[in-house]
Image 1 (cartoon, one colour):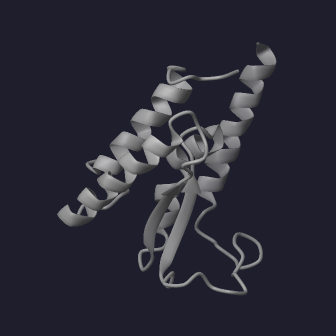
Image 2 (cartoon, one colour; image 1 turned 60 degrees about the vertical axis):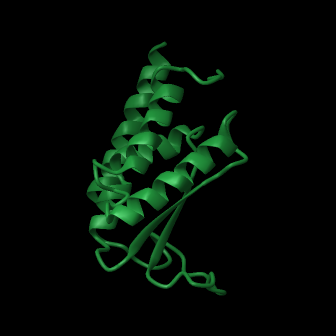
Length: 137
């Protein structure tokens, strides 16, 4: 039990450290530039994630918004992995609809009023914090 607490504290400290130091991005250190660019991806930051991933949850809580604030000229595009998690396909479909609704209303996907953001964190919390939705050890 103590080891688990220690690991959680170390992980939280690491995430906080990354969030604090997110202001200085260097190619080859903090990110890589693809040799073959993804079509239609200019000015786009794509975050691939799954509600099933504990690291994605911690990263989303502490880092994603901070990173995007440092890149105001870039557009944020989340991409949920339909193949991960018991409800991965359903979550991907729901997130796609909510992203479309947020885009139609002009709401940023990182805004606290975003339908997408609220649903994503509801999935994360149900799965990781409350251990619902078929959580596994």
